[in-house]
Length: 225
Image 1 (cartoon, one colour):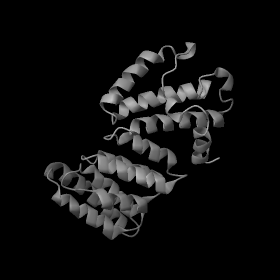
Image 2 (image 1 turned 90 degrees about the vertical axis):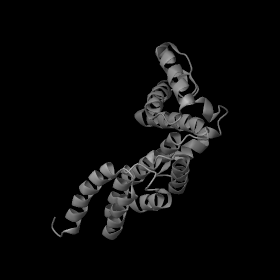
Image 3 (image 1 turned 120 degrees about the horizontal axis):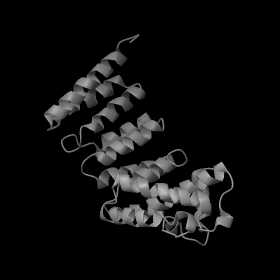
């Protein structure tokens, strides 16, 4: 069953999805409680702390796989497929909870990562919102990586062209745009994004990246390279 269909069924259940990531003390997870509280405190202060989100996601994944969404071991999933489903649902609920922060973009990236194969349009909307919430370009880098990894280079180009501010964003955005253009068989567009690096204020970092990418573009452009 597709992830979004599972989510719809899950959300119709009496227990709110937002409670999946909430700490529940049980004998097998007693050692997690202090760490979980610390991670949640960090995410409250900075909802884009990727390391803290990953640590908390690990806890809720393990808990969901072992005791189910309601914390009752008797309802725990009994095979690998069910355990993976429960773990994904737990992370989805956690990301939705954290995405409510007006400055949160990293949780939106995680939601898009979970839904990109089942709900492409929804994932693109989440990635666009994430890019709009971030001024550094870090969210755009993550979003482009999600789309490229999903085999969607054209969609990555659309996201990048719509949100890349070359003078303000970290130059790493250009790497993903050039690679996406090459993956989409658009070498001229790759060269255009490469040339845009000349506008970046960090001449050293942008220059080093351009030199690296120029070699790659040249190899792709040469037949038999």
